[in-house]
Image (cartoon, rainbow, N blue to C red; front, side, top):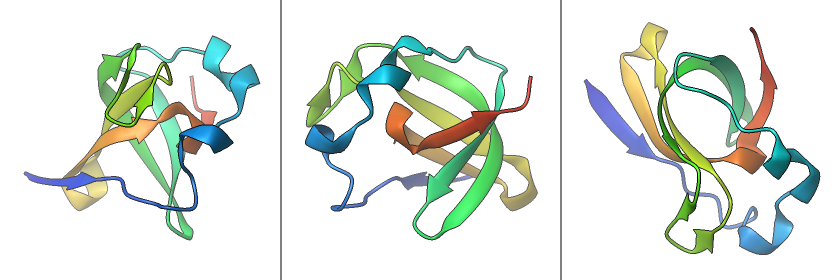
Length: 85
């Protein structure tokens, strides 16, 4: 399995949507998230409710996109655009 860390300098910690911070996703949830100019669908494998790196307090997730055999690491809550429960 390949891993990929989400990096987008246009979406730093000061730009996250605070309303969405109340919507914590769970392990096993299927979500759609923004990766650059592309939307991807995957399953949440890891939840870091306290945030990571430069964006402490903003939940982040490790999301498996099975069609790519790719694990996207540290995807911020602000990158998730919908869930497919």
